[in-house]
Image 1 (spheres, helix red, strand yellow):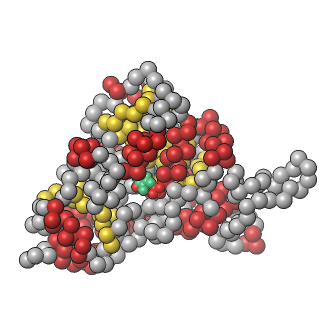
Image 2 (cartoon, helix red, strand yellow):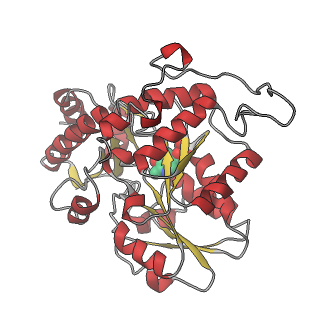
Image 3 (cartoon, protein in one colour):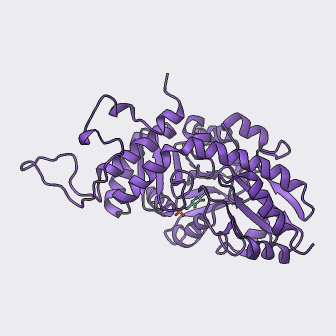
Length: 383
Ligand SMILES: *Cc1c(COP(=O)(O)O)cnc(C)c1O
């Protein structure tokens, strides 16, 4: 039986019993661009750090292990990972994607992928029939679940069935839950994406991205592409992500506990008109998540009575920071309309439900009473 996920965040089975690197418990940072060859036609396994670096290789192995993939690729950001992944496609290929995606993904698809001749169809994968959108030239389905920021939940297993039946790649951006709470490959996905900047790193201090796959053909193609395009993660940033992953379980559990407490509490606040958190039993995705995930995460989207009030909240928070990003130990609040989703056309934004009264909270690991006190203060600012 494979070991528990908390153990796997700390130990790679292949390292066991070894005392390489003088027995260092913390994996060394191999800050080198290139490697001496032992002889003509010989290699240590490392030739040049754009192709591979031992510290990067280590974080790739850990992330592959956590997601149940055969390999992972560490890139300089989540967007670098998605950009590299999209090099798998060719002009004329059609990709069905979730409509409520991270804003940067939509910006990439609309401005770069379309220019490259890719055809994209955005749908609400949580409610619309994905299979009916498949065409002759469809090559992939691209999902987030829960989505950013509207927290829509899709049934990965169901969509994987449709993907398999039509020989399509199923790609899941698993950033919001991390491998600690959800493993899309085990539900039938072919490729998992992470913004490692978020829960994997976990400390709001490093940008990183990952692609994980369980398909050998895709792994071989991506190895060629990462070496050719060159956005691999640096040795030091690889080390920071390795360090962050050591406490992934502790952080995820505690942040989730805070999130459930806050979501329940927010519902009772008079200026709050809606709370979207899949851990709440009334959330439409609650039952699906109970089947496919081990937790509900720590992202909450909520709406307040007026736009003015939403802006006041952003201006008045002090301990909670008004900042983009998510998944770190510090609680952050953001305004999707002008921040994370500013480049998404207004019409699409509103269609997805991102209104000027929508706020997104990434709940950290502070004491919940302090988070409530701060939120109470900003929610009732004019009482
Ligand atoms: C942040 C984020 C990304 C992009 O990652 P970066 O590391 O910021 O480039 C992609 N997908 C999701 C869901 C994200 O939250």
